[in-house]
Length: 215
Image 1: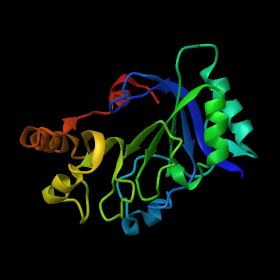
Image 2: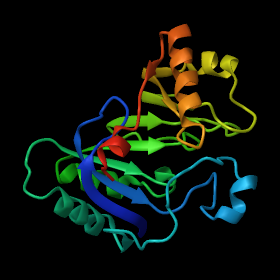
Image 3: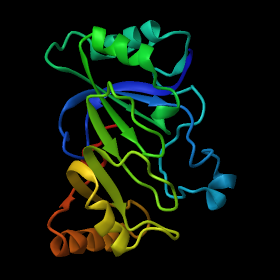
């Protein structure tokens, strides 16, 4: 299988439980909830995505003919830093492309594998850290893992406080709320804080990489 990668780079994880951890970010091209084209946003299931996942023209991006070639490229971005090698597979929707060969190749190079997914496709059983970010109006089938990260509030129909309470019962080690970053960011932060204050099972997370000027 070949792989379409939008970009790949070394950075620090900026959000969630693993925030602050050195990581290779591997962003796959393509998503099943939005085409990535602005003309399609209004009709998409996910309408608030702020990530460019179209094409393979980003830093470190390209078409990779096989898993070993992609894993070697990821190892090149990690460099000589040693330590616990950590890679975040994201998108778009990474589970459209992750397969046995890639999981095995990354593990063979010493990587702990994390995924950031919308949860509409089952996560590969070999992934070491599963982070699911559900989108309003989608059918989330991956309802277990390490980290549930809910962007709040979301536009459109499908996420109410009763939905939040239902998600709180899903089998995740951590339930996180992240304020939606749009023109109403201040109000969204207040709403996310209020949610956590009313529902202490949830915790607040912010996108620290945006404040720090990281990718």
